[in-house]
Amino acid sequence: MASRFGFQSSTMIVTNTPGADLALTNFAYCSPSDLHNFAVPGTKLFLALVADSFVLSLSPHENIRTGQIALNAIQRRHARVSSGDTISVRRFIPPEDYNLALLTLELEFVKKGTRNEQIDAVILANQLRKRFSKQVMTSGQKVTFEYHGNNYIFTVTQAAVEGREDSKDAERGMISSDTYIVFEASNSSGIKIVNQREAASSNIFRQKEFNLQSLGIGGLGAEFADIFRRAFASRVFPPHVTSKLGIKHVKGMLLYGPPGTGKTLMARQIGKMLNGREPKIVNGPEVLSKFVGETEKNVRDLFADAENDQRTNGDQSDLHVIIFDEIDAICKSRGSTRDGTGVHDSIVNQLLTKIDGVESLNNVLLIGMTNRKDLLDEALLRPGRLEVQVEISLPDENGRLQILQIHTNKMKENSFLSPDVNLQELAARTKNYSGAELEGVVKSAVSFALNRQLSLDDLTKPVDEESIKVTMDDFLHALHD
Ligand code: ADP
Image (cartoon, rainbow, N blue to C red; front, top):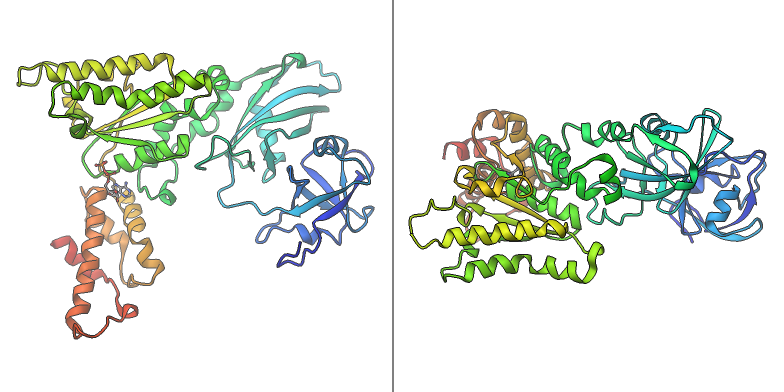
């Protein structure tokens, strides 16, 4: 197959590894003249997708002839090939944002008798991350690793890329310094893995902030890290890992704070990250049907899909993320409403019954949102219900800057943003503005700019798009509007 880097052939002949077998299974040799075929542009990496099944790093070796690739015994077994076979080998260019969030390795055995029957997960994880930095791992792949005279052989049982919509099934990604590695020992290995919990906290769990700007969310990195630790982790890691790590499974969370601060943005993103599709969003006042009795039915219907799924698919059931906006509309403290009908009480009861019933399901995550946490029925906030509560407050200056950047990004790309626009200054001047209000400022600055343009020209003439610029004055105008 031809490529713009002149790589003509995607087939190579398998040969044995020269000299001693490579201890590291993620590396293979080719001839010095073939090496450039595998260069990843803009990096020092040479990566090859071998037999369409796994990705190896290539190094040059003088003893390998052009058109040959040297694979060691484990690699040959994995690719189901023998020396002399012709196989497909293609340059592999990693997609963007390809770093692994999680890598689960099952330890099969340790070659060379080790007298130490314990493995310290923290130490081993650090070594692996260093040694395999920027290497691509594929689920099912075997990895050998030499450390302190021992040869460890692992199978990759899970490789999950952070932020991928399909992260649940992403089967390959690159090891980075942030990859969280979980070790599992197979029963036959006779090895005990210690310090696993610390391994967990040494990585994502210690992360204080996430960068969410690329997801269109400004200034909420710390809140997201908090949510991740307290509610998200139990969904990202497989159940047998969460139980080992002592991560608690959370069924519900509450995002609360002033309107327009990004609660819906955040909840949507969480939903998408967790199951790869748009979450179901319902709105309190909508559910609150004016017909008595209907609301309870609406509440029951919300959970119906998850219940059916669980009934049919058991443990294999999908995760159902239900986002409940303005949850206070239907979950006001019982007895607090003055309509005397007890309607609210029975709705709250219905919702509580459903959430409690979900205990055995484990396939529902309910995210409630409200501007008025104080109005909510206490019972809803108890453990096992919306137990993780995260306040989403007004953005600080840095958050405001990020939000302004997000909402002016398109303009900037299309050169509609005048170079004199100082977002930093605007961020400083917009204390107490919410994300939604900042978005409003950007929109109104744009309309000032358009009006200026239209009043200058004759309305019958077509507008010269090139000449429209949103200036700092437009923004200042918008602030004082
Ligand atoms: P809430 O649910 O807290 O009332 P939303 O998430 O619905 O607020 O925010 C409304 C709109 O305001 C969003 O669609 C977005 O355009 C903008 N916005 C609010 N907060 C942020 C933020 N933190 N980052 C980027 N945009 C934001």
